[in-house]
Length: 89
Image (cartoon, rainbow, N blue to C red):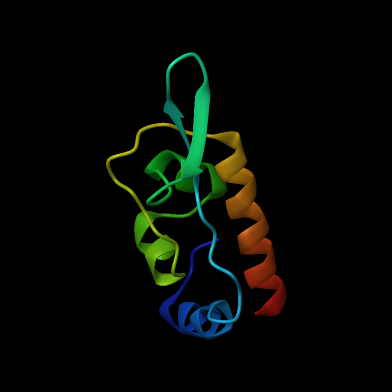
């Protein structure tokens, strides 16, 4: 589904009231994997959900172009966020 500018404006007004998603990042540590909140979602994660970088930014989703990894947790977070936005819009 392509997001048009008019549709995006409506969604942005609704997104203001929806909590913005935060990506989960795994950082390698000594002997274990530590988890932290990331800077933004990777392009691959956005593509898995069906969003382009431009559409994601219009919805207020932070994008980190440096990241190459794709985490299933982040894909689920994005899907839930989009369902909430579409449900409200």
